[in-house]
Length: 125
Image 1 (cartoon, rainbow, N blue to C red):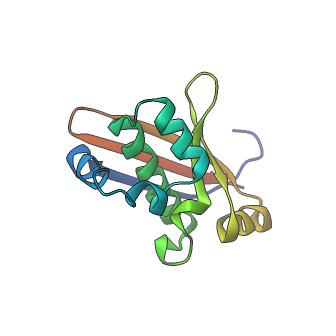
Image 2: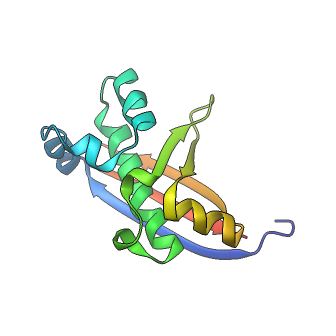
């Protein structure tokens, strides 16, 4: 693993039906997701699985840094995909300050099935 030191991990799981129901609220997307994420969702026809995966990453990230969502805003954690479809996090605000100050390297894994979406975040230093 090289010189990376394991620091923290966070995991989250959510029911897809909960996200599908939340998406019916017009404010849900703008309340929890960045503009870049919303553009990504629209490009993918508001796919519930992608929205649920991103939501889980935000919760898992907040757990991994040890603050929970009480300190960081959900919109300050953008979850995007690289050209191969692998998720990665772009932090803003307080989350970015922690990432920079502590020298965090953020690793993300997501998955879903018919009923659930799950995400794990591992933070190395």
